[in-house]
View (cartoon, rainbow, N blue to C red):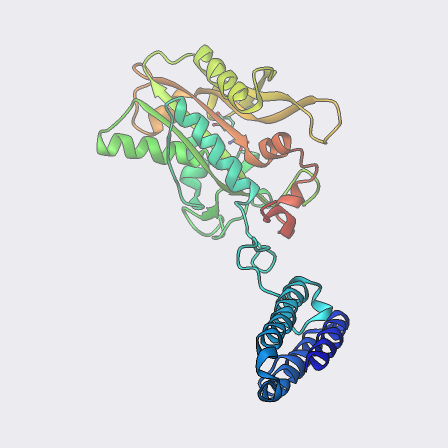
Length: 345
Ligand code: DAH
């Protein structure tokens, strides 16, 4: 029996050594330590062993059984955590972090983000957010903004009219500027008696039938600002714009005002900033929009006495600001919905 046990031990351990897959290991288990395996098959021989030898043979039987069983356990562990090619299925490690590739995460569109950042900065300067409709009429888009009937800005070629201006008294149109919200806010403040003072910004979409190219789009975004109070002056306008520029583009931001003309402000200016529009290119003066002191005619049209109140206004292109801030070279990239613009990186 001792010979049989030695034989089982040496062939068993050798066979165990060469088992390379989980299936082979299972077959080995059945052959050697299973209920009908070789160890079990030698057990009946115990009854033929001489009484005085039973102790020593029994001890040897246990040794061989234990050696084979612990060999099996060790092998199971190495095969289980080894390469999946050598086992029926890889061991599942529930503690391993997952990979997030099936449900890609999105983020805010860059225009939404910039709009939020601008509103946040102006909120710190005391501006509230006001909203107005995108479907407007000539009264708010032109007349009350001191833009006379014959003004070229009213040309149907340059606007998206919804009604035919030759046939309808107050034709509707997609607004071409967010300055409409100045009018709506002043009208509202006067009608409801809560202002002036008025201090608002209004971000939103505007529409113009421009040919699309790297810097133009038929739909884009502006942010309008309006501050009406007693004794508001041009220097308040300049310091507000400088504070905005430094808060958003950094303390080094350079700004300049250039004399200009808008029907709704007097005096009027263009607001420029030193910005690099393409990554790596030197900064240049970029026109972000217009500004000025609100024309007394505009205040009067909204029922505000220009002898008592004065104010400034500004209107900037949000795309221009976004392109300057984030180094986007072409406005079309903002509207093409390339998924890379929307992916969380
Ligand atoms: N509405 C003008 C435009 O679309 C921009 C503008 C200029 C807005 C001067 C203002 C302003 O409020 O005061 O080009």
